[in-house]
Length: 117
Image 1 (cartoon, helix red, strand yellow):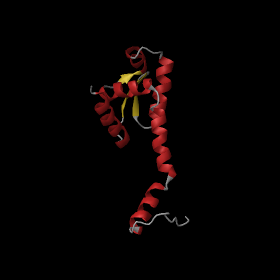
Image 2 (cartoon, rainbow, N blue to C red):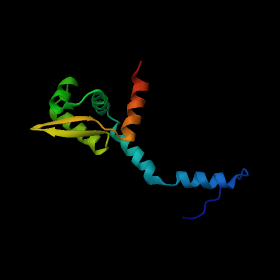
Image 3 (spheres, helix red, strand yellow):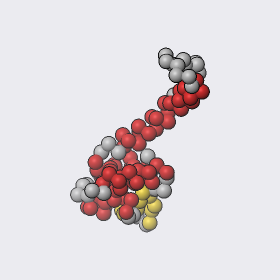
Image 4 (cartoon, rainbow, N blue to C red):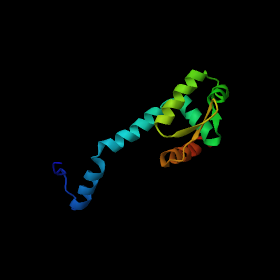
């Protein structure tokens, strides 16, 4: 990686080097952007919030949120791909709930703060 020189030196080259190192890894920021893209749909946020409080099957999720089962399944797949929810199979039913990943727990906390009003 090419050494970057800041146009304005403020006497702390070590701090500048650390900032450049921390913010130059585009892949990490792309991963965060992908999670937010997946949450850019109100129905996905509704499903995620529901699954933070209970474990539920697709048909019940669709009924609770007044949407079709295929639409609910589509949103669930996207949330699962982002590792925000997990599933388990019991017979023919698949049950979903919020995952215990750090990202999921942080998002749960954020949504509790924003939606508490």
